[in-house]
Length: 196
Length: 196
View (cartoon, rainbow over the protein chains, first blue to last red):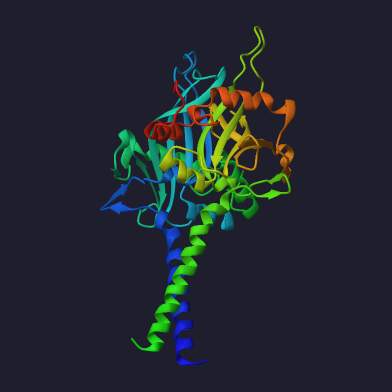
């Protein structure tokens, strides 16, 4: 092989390595971004992997005799794609996992619909992040009101959420019992908590 | 520039062009695949872009005096990512768009849940494809029973679906009126049908 050919092959190899490198780094690019201690609102979460949706779910029993709620909200859950890929292979959430809970108002009355409910406007957005930077390994954030950054929730605001996730989550701190594809993967991988 | 250096640069350029070419082709890779006239079940649709979910939706009014349905189904809608990207830029569905309707059973009773409903097992899957290979430009497919391939629905099975989508869809043949982010994008782009 002459010098020119060798150099060309090395150049090609370098080009390949460069692009493979760029592509290999991309998945990590969908993880959390911080401004100081605040989490930056993930702008692209609607293109992330959808886990499931609920309607009108509530973990607290209604008070006896209370009227049914006048409004019912859908709750859509999304996860960043690189963490989802990792979960599907291991049954565990890698560091830098972000789960977004998007809360949407619902309507039954619109266009040709005659029964049931469909989703309308965004009513809230919460994010649950697994990151070794937090003392607990996980943190909750609320982006209520469409704000661009949020500090980790702390103190009494979030203590009941943390306690409930620690006690009742099927997979680490996450409610995999309500996300069918996650439940299946964790069952296959043997990473469900006892009792599930 | 000596020969070796020139060759190395050309090799790098070739490497770049090769990988840019590969990446540029990837978006088209999420479109429909056929085996003869049958559509191959899109295996990765759960990683596609989620458009919205409904619960218990029905376009037909219940019969007077009929009891409420004993089972309520969630309907999740996903679209292939390259077509979604294109829609967000143009407000139009490009050729080779695939919308997947995943039908899931629901439960209200599980784990700590006390009200509302969450998603459980897959109960059906339908696909709506825009492709110039069909006389009408669009075709419906049903993958009921988890089959791997499906012929386009035809005749009386699908005529009411087609007629309803032609008459009532907000965006081309699709019910964008029930997908909030699509509705917003089409409104912004001026591609909603009159009346929406």
